[in-house]
Every structure is written in structure tokens, then in C-alpha cells.
Image (cartoon, rainbow, N blue to C red):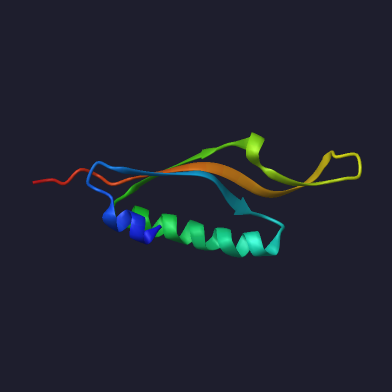
Length: 87
């Protein structure tokens, strides 16, 4: 994501679909921690980061009747905007 942010033009956007932010599933939690840190870093650099929660895409653990029993990860659509250059 850092490389995409580096090359996007001022006023441009990076759009990511179905970014999972983990809760219970350990590998997902480790991955999502890195994503959260990167998004925070981009905000500190002046990028606008918009996360739109998409509950229909959340990831659950299911029981034998295929009913969700535990939320494993929350899904988001993420847009990263590079602000226009001033000058």
C-alpha cells in the first residue's frame, strides 16, 4: 500500500475492496494489524482514508447448520485519497 500511495497522483485515489480486519482468527489479526498501522501512517502523511463497513461481507465461523456463531473478521471498503498539491 505504501508503494501505491507513493505513485498515486495528487487528487488520485486507491480503492481496496473487502479489506478484512481480524478479531478471533490469529493470522487475520496479524495481517489486519499491519493494514491498520499502514492506514494510520498514510493519514499521518496527509492522505484521506475512508473505511466503509460492509457487514454483509464479514467473515464468521459457522455451526453445523451453517448459521454464523462467531465473528472472525469485519470487512471494509477502503478509499485512500491523495490530496491535491497546494501551490
